[in-house]
Length: 268
Image (cartoon, rainbow, N blue to C red; front, side, top):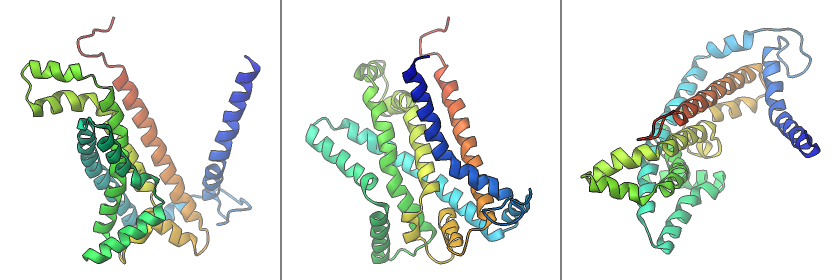
């Protein structure tokens, strides 16, 4: 093994240690019977039991998951439609203008986006709560889906569409039977990215959350302001493990999909 390879591997190890050390520290003290973040006295599952018996927290977790699923599903549909529309624009200036408008919500600071949504919802009379959070999550998730789907559309050869039309496929048939199957990896990537952003978002949600409705990120922030509790560590550990399960599951799904033979090509 060359010296450069050893240095690169050492660099990766250091990077992963920096990234995961705080998470491992948090997970370690979620089992601390002392109830503090220092001085581990003994192993206990008391804080996990407290999480599962906290009815309000469980309702907030359900709210967060429902918001994430609904917003990611709706934004995926809108994002696919938007990507198809942008892909049909052939002139460079209008196309670049549409892409720039799509990227505004991605590059803008979350605080600015959250304050803008707060003012907008107040002006048009939308009550802050489930609807306001859902609409704001859809709004900042759609551009992400567009960016995931658009490269797959650009990879698709125009001759594939011409062949489908020559075989008698209608416009809707071309979209549903040729385009959608081809860009399916981009659609799944966009959905999972939107789901991740929705579950993780705090700044925008903090502005548009009303009384009686909250999400997990806002609730953790509110509880952390009154002092770090091991129950927060336990909750964060469960979320991290759930996220890892999703990532591993997505990895195996994509790996299984890549092993499938292409149309008209038989595996030896």
